Length: 480
Image: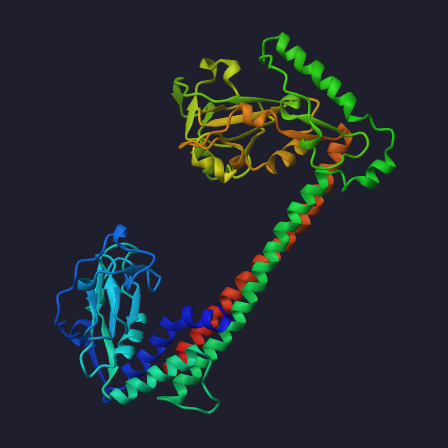
């Protein structure tokens, strides 16, 4: 769909409102009547709508319903065909969809209203006029009872109605000749100007959308180059004697062995060595590939039943991640438990990242950090906690790049478990380089944030410009 047509479809209700306002001011040349008083009684009984199974991909007669699509399928039910008193206007009692139908068709579903205007009303003009009406109803319900009470200012002359139709149809295909006049040069110029100005705003919005896409790609590129070591190539050249990640892994292994010995974590069955196929890129010197289970611990929550209180230890459910203030870090919850009643082994320690592990929330990829105080999490939530010798900032940056929705099973209720996350392969830099990477990324992403702020400001200006264009169109239409 080209820009002209896109703007035309979007603005058509506004154009008809401008035309309606114009005729509403002319007390001699118009009739001001309700929609229901403009309707003729149909000489036939409306056939019962088809079921979904009765609508086919191929057939002799097109099926028309209250959906957005003009035709939803085909049927061979000849007894259901409506072929007389055409053209007719279809109105969706639930959807508020309006269609102009001038060909034999079959009604596709219940809730379809067939409208035929009286002989002194041009069917196409009536169709366009309905598009300009607002029914002021909710998205789903019975809308026709409101529509039929609406008033329309209809020109008394069929000839004038036809000229309006010709103007609208020529406008649709950008076929209005310079200097040509149809029914009112003043209103026509206002509408043409609104069409052209709306295209300018659309192009501006398209450019802003493109900039947002590029900015999103830039953020992804920054993070990708970070975990590949490309952002810190100069840093490595300036710091050639930094302890390699292989030594870091030795200390991590010792730390984990001590935690197992103290009974703080369970000993896991070792995963197979990382194959060459699992390594997506070549690492810089001093880096190592390792699995997540080597450098972090996973813990699922539970349905705890500790005594509740107004304050204390936060018991965080998936829904609590959306509470105000919890956009990044968990700072509040809908449930609190007494601290002195809680087993320490149930707590999720500071320096953890929590995320949904069960249900549709997995696909949101939401993650929240635990920084200020330990918390409890419910059974639909999981936490990952890095060991002391791993930089939290670097790990979070890498973990945020993982699409959890791709890890879960394909069951009716999606779920991710330890077996899905522990085998993940992470590129591990030396500890000091991890800190350097985070510092570099934070600076670059801060610049991205500035760019995003500028784009959003420009978006706001574009929205204000469109509102100004609309206000000016109606101001001119009202003769102010």
